[in-house]
Length: 263
Image 1 (tube, rainbow, N blue to C red):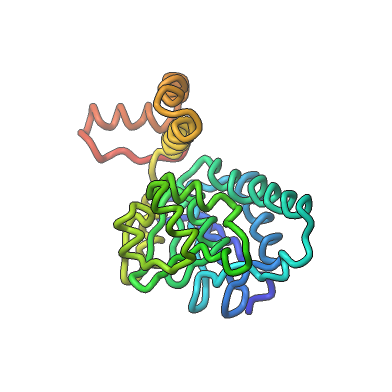
Image 2 (cartoon, rainbow, N blue to C red):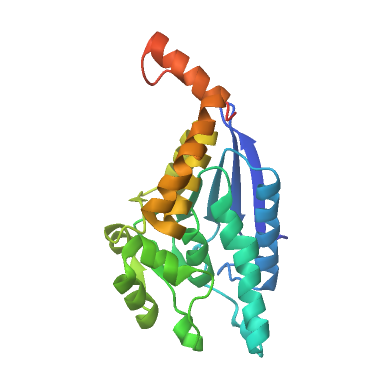
């Protein structure tokens, strides 16, 4: 086990783009105990304060995570439980979704409860054929409360989300891809995820952030709300260095030749 339950490593790609890799490395099961939650909150605060151009979330060990250490829940009052969930929305799920860059989650093995809920707050989920997913909170009489049911419903439909949560069953990567939850499956998911993240990091980062804002508006208020904010969000891109340079490149050299600095 690493000294810290997580690590956050930043590096610059060959294309000159900064990527951040957040790794869960907390013993053989990568359980989310208080130390793990605190570390992930701190890592996401770091990313929020100084965003890279793309983020990869991954895990060391045989499993991505076997879920939450049940000691975290022992003896909580209703108010303490509500406070716990509010903190995890405020410091993990919501800021992760709000990062102004693409965020990819790589699931190489078993991905349960908190880890799966975190993956659902990412933009893209890639998986190994061996990965399995579950929201198994029913084993302690709980429902997933870090945003899992609603984000699963958004990707897979509300009927699938209710089945997934109420049965507490494990679902394989192929099923999750069929449901639209997992974007793609790769034998070497770590390498494939890094390739994808580096490709996204080399793209027009401000435009990617605008895409996230438009989709977020749709999520909260439907097509009408997304339409309402698109003009200003997209209009602002015309003053970015990346768009100006890419338009000139397209006109001079055709499509696909532009390079981006993220500005």
